[in-house]
Length: 270
Length: 198
Image (spheres, rainbow over the protein chains, first blue to last red):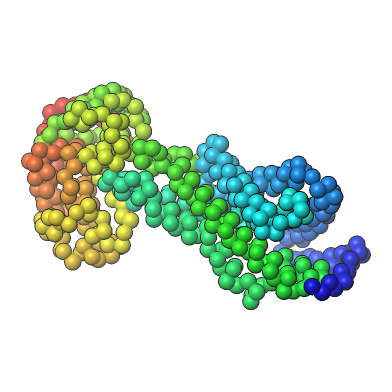
């Protein structure tokens, strides 16, 4: 492996790059788009949030403590679950609104770390935060996307196809048969983005992680190997997460008497 | 015999009545009075408290699908999950004869459902609901979208179902139809339920 030199950026370098935002602002003023305020806030938020994360990660990396890693990992799962729920137009009532996403993401995250970091990469100790946290973040981000798409498709199409689902139930179908069309559609929708992005990776876009490693001076072939590993972890995690969330969600939309229970969804007006 | 004891349906006073095999009970009342809600509760499509039994078998002692194979609800606006009508029938036996008896053509079984008229779909749905001969048929305005001729044909099919010893509970806005088909009627008014002769 050839190790090229890594070039450290100064804050002055960042300030120069930030001047590019002025072009965006200038366009907004020139065309009276009225988005310069939102743009400024977004740019500042991005910079502040990323810097803050940088310092937090630096602190945790120097600890190499299982407890700190677990703590931050749990925070990431909870934020991802909240985000998955916030994206739903029709949420489940009560505890399940959070429970479904949190449970699924916790399971998928844990599995991805144990398998991807613990078994495959194998750092010493296995919970080394430098490996665990970035990989957890990438897996959670993609799984969250799949879960929210899958659940959104499930609930909206169950509402839209209510007459068809209840016709099957009336004719003696079990809830699994009655929901099968809807469930399949939701599973497919949830898994499509990761399949599409796998197919386009390397041709249309170079993944951010791989680009980062190359900039850090890692041999491109080595960087590619990491990217392939991560992509498989993401694809596996997303598929498992979408499956668990959609099947769980379909169960929650029906009951043990095999009735369709759309009353378990909140009204959009609320 | 379908037997209800103190069944609590949303918005209605507790309901108790019996319907025997071969009998047709009409359900009448203004729009929104709870006719559909009552029928849905009988088919166990919505949770409802109270005792409901069929020939002595309590609803809760068998699974939901088993119950709904005996106590079958046919909605006023039928839903479809497949491409063509043919995918929606429990059996092929006697299908084409029944279709013909309702003035539909065999070829329409394999047509796209979106190309059928509302009335054609309603007739398909009636056949779908009674082809495997459920003990109790709950019909929610089964002829609402049909012309006079098709209505007569549909009523013939319903009468045949009654003659075979099955019961029918019929929601209808047409007093003439109630007189032609029903033995008794259940009237819902202001949340109260009254059963009387036709």
